[in-house]
Length: 213
Image 1 (cartoon, one colour):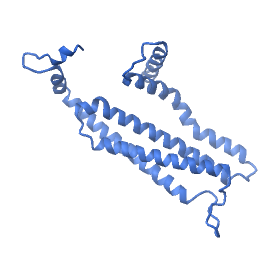
Image 2 (cartoon, one colour; image 1 turned 180 degrees about the vertical axis):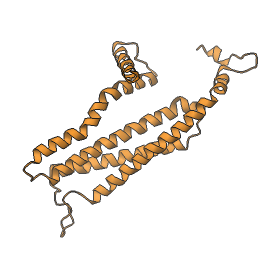
Image 3 (cartoon, helix red, strand yellow; image 1 turned 90 degrees about the vertical axis):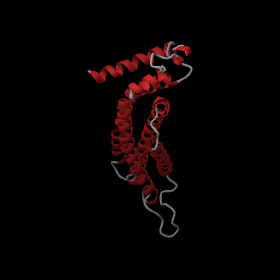
Image 4 (tube, rainbow, N blue to C red; image 1 turned 30 degrees about the horizontal axis):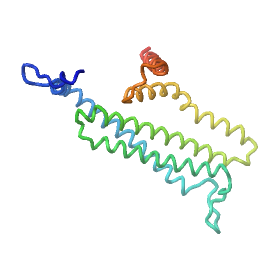
């Protein structure tokens, strides 16, 4: 839109932006209701992950040495993976809760709906997904520590690793084109017209079409 058109007024003396806000009041109310419900739900999930991962630090696999108080499997590589994954999952969940708490306290103005709120929803969802991924990594590491001396350890570990990673592997082809398309749409320096941009735009359209079918 040309800058002069933004300042133009109709017969009632209203600018295009003012008319747009007036005609979309109901949509903004519906969007505010949906955002609050979504943010509340995801925040609860984030709090649950925080509770689980915080407790996991004090209930490490194999317990502690009664004399020194040091974890029994502290020298195991799987134990290091468990601790690192636990810490990353915990911090990602905290970021999730903070992001959705910020949404709950938003003013829900038209400017917030344009950039701030969509960015908060996406960032919260990404951090929540990251926390869930590393929670499953911590689970697999704990599973490996507990059953490392079992005769069927390798078979069980492979089966558990496949089952825990299956949901994320299945969702990756769906979410990746959407995330890339949203990034390009919100990027000031748009690359949607080049070859890569057209590819991801086509993938995004096919993803939406698959859901409609």
